[in-house]
Length: 349
Image (cartoon, helix red, strand yellow):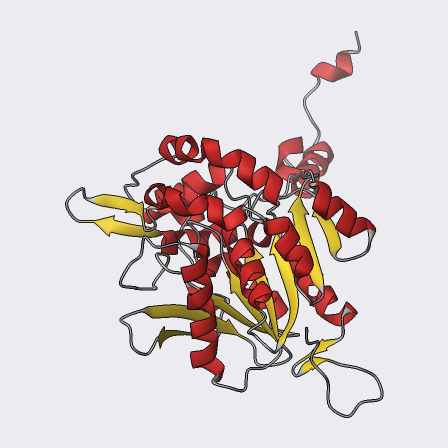
């Protein structure tokens, strides 16, 4: 064995050793980048205000009734993207995507009857006829007899309402229709399971943060930021139970469910405007939609890595698809823009 290894260190060695300790990390772990402090659950799932995504909110009172509908608006340019949420959601379901779309178009998101901050004489009446009347009444109050070009965008139940509104052909400035993740066959087949699904979900929340956390961890929403802004509007506080409950009592509206989706495919195909169907995953098209797609009657996009709420789970991709739809169909603020004409023209039935 080398005896030098047992010799005392010389002064020069001490200096070199000291320098080495100054220039090298104490251990391999010291070179790992500093990790930011972990947020507590209450911070991670803290609510976000609507004003971070929309420019304004307002109440729209319907004449000769006690119905008041709440809407959110973002942007001032281009056509109006009029958004209708699904059952149990609210207009804030489109918040994060609206902040992207507003660069190219105006986004209006409405709280439907029995949802969000809207207040009506009968919040349980979610029949397709009543909901369509509500949408048209709000549009009339907002724009009187001179509405801009409107693209209806509807998610789930809202997709059905958008289709039925378009099919009435009373909205003369309708320039496009976008249906988000609803197909008649699949929707009708799922109705027999809906009450069980509703009863199996968490019913009470000690705080809004807990509700947001449950929506994300439970899988109903996959985007934390979207959940933080959209979930609070789906809740109400119960003073007697000292907890938060769902704002919309969907289980009491079963009598209307079939009407949302029955015959939806043929009605969708009959709408005389450009149409886009967005699906989460490879949803099965029924015969009517399969034939319609083969005939080029509508555009279909399957959005990967998303759950049912495409506009919430992948808001950037959703916004891009909406903006591309507008561009592809040349939909401007006054309708379908036809090259060579001074004023854009609306597609009429």
